[in-house]
Image 1 (tube, rainbow, N blue to C red):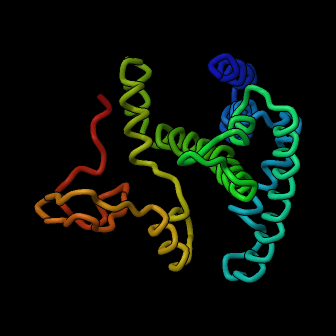
Image 2: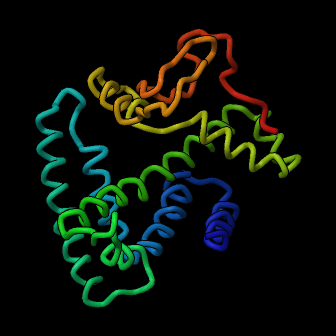
Length: 231
């Protein structure tokens, strides 16, 4: 992965500029993901098309029915693609995650043939979109906050802390952008976690099993920092 990253950066350096997603944020994590999964690298464009068909269907925000129908058809294509790949991995397993999946067990029982494409579906969306979006958001942050960028340039020891802080601050999900209210509610629900013990959070008592949502910024006006120093 590091060698691939350096190769991509060298290419950007030679050109003097780039469109970041196309030049780095898409190829770096996506090629790594396909390799880990044991999926054919030459099919990257197909997998990106399928991923975008679910996450970003080509319909205006108000056309919910059109978007839903498009997602349904794309989902059927994804399942058909993975069902074929799963059969291949069952017949000829290799040293990759797809082969591990078809041999995996949960609570002492094999993963079922119905569960395998479900898991593959989620891995596809996460593997081809989440890291790309996070990389883009992180680079955008440094472009908009040159002092933060200069800090890690001057002292690379800040890089690990910067990565952790950017991951916390720039959580990417369906909440971002011009989402409709119901999409925001759905996204918040997806980000929900439940407490396993009573807590006192910013002077508020929160009981065991309460539903909580991780938010990036202090949207409620508490006297708490939005971001920490990168050290």
